Amino acid sequence: MPAWTQDDETCSLDARIRTTVQDRQKKTFKQKEPIHSVQVFGRKKSATAVAYCKRGRGNLRVNGRPLELVEPRVLQYKLQEPILLLGKEKFSGVDIRVRVSGGGHVAQIYAIRQAISKALVAYYQKYVDEASKKEVKDILIQYDRTLLVADPRRCEPKKFGGPGARARYQKSYR
Image (cartoon, rainbow, N blue to C red; front, side):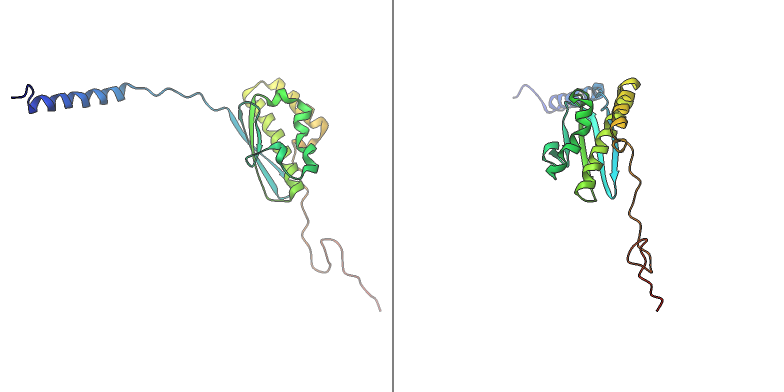
């Protein structure tokens, strides 16, 4: 005859279930530290770039690709302007991911550089001190205002009576 009976087995099973439930209730999930991040956008004509900036190791990516691989290569210097102005040490503590859509190649480049600049200023304002944010902002504005302020110019729609928005068809008196 076995040393244990049916009742012993169910009791031990009940006890095991009870202890696991109690253990689960006791477990408190470790609080994750908050993710310091900001999301801003840059615009030029119909191109929109959304930059997501968080604490990191200085990675800059545009549509999942490194900044150096963004086309056209001719305007690569325009993309590097915020980094060259402020120095790599300002960007070393943050990761910036940019999604860009709409517009043409040139407008996208201008939207990206504006989004990167605005993201860094917003991050410094929210998570670093106000003095360093003001310093960054002043350097950018002094160099080129469009790094932080959107260009409001838009294409004017065509009207009737002419080939374009303002030009009129030629008029003959005789």
